[in-house]
Structure formats: structure tokens, C-alpha cells
Length: 236
Image 1 (cartoon, rainbow, N blue to C red):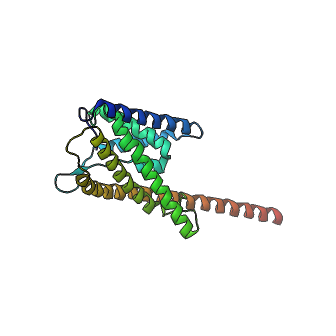
Image 2: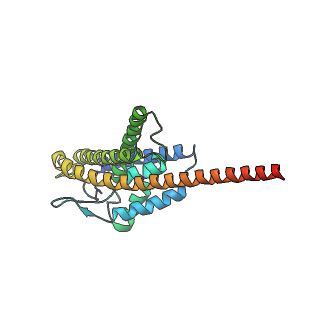
Image 3: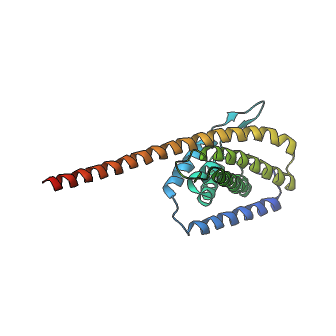
């Protein structure tokens, strides 16, 4: 999905670059209002970078790798996820030549902006529907409902990125990219993205539930010890 140099016209590259820069600037503005988890962002960037270097076969001549935008958004929130994706894509373009440097704005727009926002929007929408249906906080760190919601978000993220890439390519004069030829391989790619993302979210939920149980046991133990101390004091 990485757009190389020399495919799109300068006007399209400039417009996409301006849109990406505006989105990143807005992300920075939003992050100033809260506490950003920069340490987790660095770890997430490393995971996504490794995932981008590992292509997997889909079918026929098609291969794909995990994009990771929805996974980052679930873990970090959409604004820090956008910054993290932009940093990863810039490093790939400059360090590995994976995606053109002049086309960096396009790649950030496709995967780092549209992909992240679409995936996170579907994820949050699914949680809202589930919360209304179940009458509980489906988005809680210990809720298993986050797993299917993240799968839907991840699949939607890939499809939204693929559609954006197709439109930008057509507008910018890219040859050989037809919407009908994009849908099938990217739907399969989205299924792979959904499976990996939901599996990692499931691990996170299991970890949160185990931590919650440990914390509850610690509180119960402390209360029991306090009760025993009080009883002993009364006896003496």
C-alpha cells in the first residue's frame, strides 16, 4: 500500500501532503489537552515497524503486512496513533525506501490519517452499539467486547485506506489501479489485519483482567489483615 515516488503528479502530492500535515498538527493540538503515553507509543512504533517489514502471502500474487493503525488507536487513542504512524512511515521511506519520500504525505494520509480514524471510528461505534445492547461498559479495559470491535475496526481501516489510495491514484494520474481489482485483495488483507489486531487486543484484555483479579485479591487480603488486627486488639 506504500506509494512510491514518480507515480502521482506534483499537485496531488502537494495537496495530500498539506492534508497530512494539517491532520498531524491537529493531533499535536489535541494531545496537549491530555497526558500522552509516549513510552507506549515508542513501543507501538517498534511493533508496527517490524510488522511492516514482514509480508505475508494472501492469494495469487498478492502479499500484505499488518498496518497496525487500529491497534495503535485502541492502545494509544487516535491522535497519538496518527503521530506514531506518521513517524513509522517517515522512517520507512527514508531508511528503507519503502514508499517514496516525495509521496510520504500520500502514505501518511492513506494509512496514518484515514486508516487510523476510520478504524478507530468503527471500533468506538461498535463499542457504543454493544454497550447499548448489553447495558454495560463495553469499552472497559477488562471487557471482551473490545476484541470483536477491534476486528471490525481493523477491517474497516484497511478498506478505507485502500479506497483512499485508489481515489488519490486516479486523481493524481496513477496508472493501472482499478477499484474492482483493489477490493478483493484488500478485503482479504483486512481479514488478516482483523485477525491479528483482535488477537493482540485479546491478549491485552486478558492481561487487564488478570491485573484486576490480582488487585482485588490484594485489597481483600489487606482488609482481612486489618480485621484480624482489630479483633486481636479488642481481645488484648
